[in-house]
Image (spheres, one colour):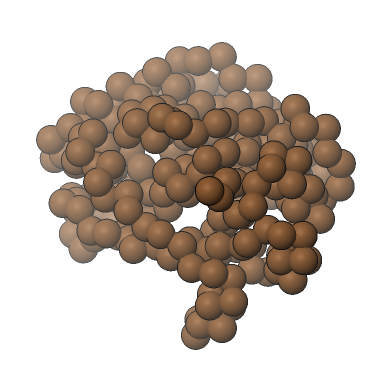
Length: 242
């Protein structure tokens, strides 16, 4: 029986694609000791509103080049929290389970978060628990493993340390992953084959790329049935047309 490993940076109330990766994982590794990148989804996510798609972004303070995700400080909540909740209210006003989504956001924002990685992880895990995706999955902080290095080599070392024989990843890994090296080490690389299954959604044409809070608000816990993507082998993935 295979042991599937997923490794990912934490993301602010992430889109359903990351939740689907969690659903497929036997072990999910929080990968927040790496360099923070401006424009990433660690501190921002998209929402649908009556005026179109908007970014909901947590402002940062004292950010400087080279900081890790687990070092980047968040601006005081008074500067942005109420604005976020107002944006969520407007985004989800027509959704039948909006109270659930707003409660999740309020509970996460009320927490004590020493850095942006902590906030992003708490928001992701709130969605994971709401949809029951934590059942049977082990969650590991990569820092607990004490594995140095970076990029493809470190990822492989993490998978092997955890005893994994299958590495499940999102599409961005195709830019740097040494697939043959994984194969030689006895690890099968599988890429997400996102179904992007539509669900009832407010404010016009369906888009799958908004926060998982949108799925909560429109479908409630039954939204878990929309998390049904599978994977394809790396050889199939890299040879498919873009």
